[in-house]
Length: 129
Image (cartoon, rainbow, N blue to C red; front, top):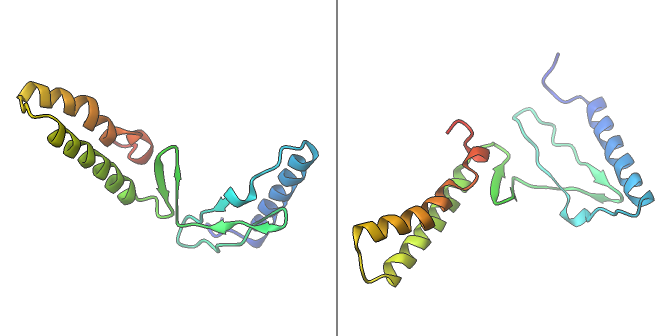
């Protein structure tokens, strides 16, 4: 069995998309087509265009969902950089705000404010950790 997506599979997916769109119109639960996007995974992907209603889905290289950035290569570089930047911003705020640099106080602040930003959704973007 070939790993390439065949033209028949693309047509089936487009047909399912069309059926879903018609169902949503029948039940007056319309899609926000401007928020619909397509992300193509894999090296041998034909990157077909998909249409919902009368508009083509825009193709994206990465997308943020529930605060986790998903990249078409499934690498977590942008997610790691975002988490590190957020943690560094909080560390800077702690350094500017607190005059007392007691070890216990800083450790407690780090555990409660910085570490959660570094560990947010790690199960989603680094499941083996």
